[in-house]
Image 1 (cartoon, rainbow, N blue to C red):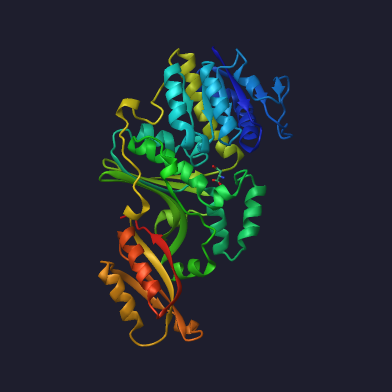
Image 2: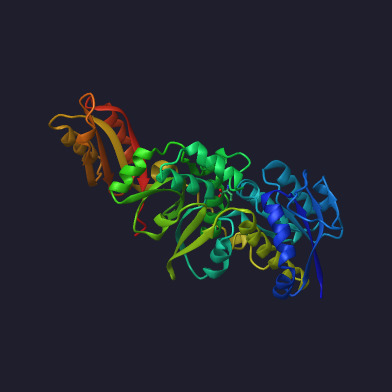
Length: 433
Ligand code: HSE
């Protein structure tokens, strides 16, 4: 039986998990792969005391893995953009296949990496970069290959979902974030989780694999959860909605929407009930309809599950003397469409609006008239008489779908009304019908 030798770069949360699961399930994995998968070398800045290296060569220089002639597959688990890019490009240059869990790397440098890999005829696999252990890249590229995909939406940051879920139960933001870090869910820089950057990396990859467009992370609209208040969570709930942090990619005439932001979703939808560190991705295909992929979006062994799935794919190919099973983004490079990401003003969404209004006759009529002048239809209104303070009351509204440009103009006009005090809070809403 052929031996495929894997070199692991990085022994943090995911590196440790990958090492342990590969060892624990070695014979089961071998039976499935049809070849032996051996860890030939490990390199990391720091040792991980949760793993037993035995006689596997270890070094502190990750480039030792790339330069080891006996290694077939370089597994990049160091994270970050720059050193990881250098490492992966060096591995490709040396003719090695690459497995990575690094969504930042793929979202930002993926076009360059795939081009280099294509020239060298090596595989670059990145399932673990998106939604942790959920095999959603494989589902989109392979299981849904027959479909024209019109939209993808998901909870794709476990830390953010964990924080929103716990805030819903009354806990403080900073407490929950600390716990997520201790549990190994959060990024090295947790602002990537909290400000939506990590979700935007993942959405960029999902959109490219779904629609067959080049990776365009720099054009994604990104808004995090740091401004979501318990007040809005409670009032969304009263209107029949949950606030979830979603990544939404939608194919439109002439471009794609690529946006990450807090979103109201009807409580009865399955995705609204995905809590804690769990992720869920909805994919709408023209033949299959809506499908949903659900599971652990972060954590050591959950993410290792996806890393090892890619290792096995590569090992099967290597042991059969072939190079690539599916194109990097699921489309042949020549078939990628040059569809641009649309500016956020061009997206279509429903909206939750909250404003402080003077409590006197005619105010609601003025608000409605501004909205109707911009073609905005109101679905529901709540006036909180019980919260009257200094002659002002909160007014909360839910609108039907409208173009963001229209909503921006309407909000500017509302904020200019003498009867409205302070900024109008806006949270986008979706019902996926
Ligand atoms: N920080 C990421 C998350 C890890 O919380 O989802 C998995 O990509």
